[in-house]
Image (cartoon, rainbow, N blue to C red; front, side):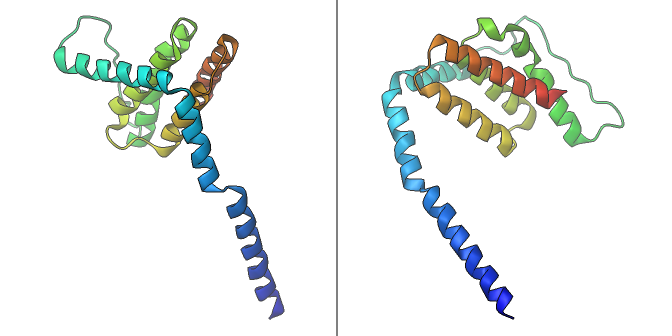
Length: 160
């Protein structure tokens, strides 16, 4: 009988410890500071995303390379969506050294939109948020290349 109460007290202590450790107000203040210090980068990214949206609305049919992803007859929908997403990202893996990080983020968002519509999986949104937050911290060119290679290795590890 005494063991159950003791376990719940331990759970309460652990919950309090993690709650204090993850202080959400401090985390939000840190995010606000990062965004405030890097507002020009964020504004530029938003401007470029808005430009891409306007470009989509203006142009209906553009001549270029068309990506065709076919579903196998025995393949479940979930597996097909996952494969289609990573196949849509494949061109990034070839040209990432020559692409700015903004273009990689925009391509990633576009692939999410294309494959999953309005409800992309949370794992992709969380990962993209982490990358953008890291990018908003002032990066040197070497750190930008490291972030690019981390993005590409994550894509390749998830794809294969």
